[in-house]
Length: 323
Image (cartoon, rainbow, N blue to C red; front, top):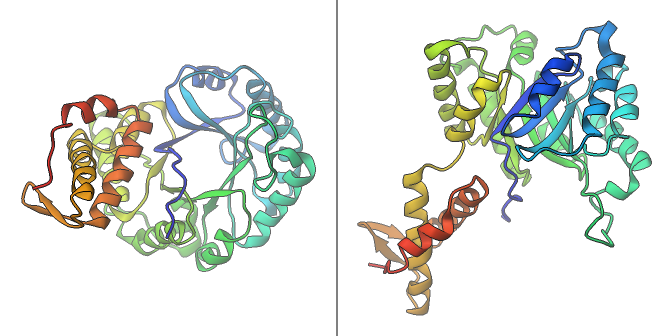
């Protein structure tokens, strides 16, 4: 299977669209993705104001610290999604739309149709005649119910805009009458299914549940454990609700220094092994073959995107030989 496009969304931080103070503060952050929220954090009477706030913010010049600017709109079933899209699709610097409560492919069909009619030049199938052409809009779908979970295959194939799935644990627990526990074992099946579906359908992002604990040392420890647990299930990012969570999540979902160093050594030595006609060899007593090399290349590419000085590391290990 081909590799999913390299998209870095280690942290997806929600910022309420109704709070001008929080919107302004967000522009000083260093984070992979900010999702400006029109849904749960905004009361019904503040929806219109929040749309205007976010539109103004996304019309401002981009800031260096934010890789991706997203907006979480209201669910299609709410009747508010069209009003949200009508406003935010006018913004100059919108990258991604987060769609909550996606229960079937039809929810994504609706969003896709609106984008195609409103921004035909930002459709994935549209050739870009110049380098100045805007990149296409990405969609991230929140899976929040048993119905959505049971229809993952259709949802993943619903639109060329889809760039990943997000697991919404609290709404899923409500739908299933579950009680969230520290072990998160009640969500094991759902989380595994979502991460697997992303890989099966070549979607770059599988974004895990929100960690509701963030205050103090205990909250930070809980967040780190949840990040590493999600990473072990195949997730490559996490939803966040407070700026203090960003650094931990982005570190947890990046390769470690040790992982990057070993991967660089594999890549360097494999080029030499290939010239020697050796398809399998060893490094530090471990067998290295095609799957291991493929994983190493992926780690190196991700490390570079996460800010590691890969060039310097390759120089350091330039003498590495296959054993």
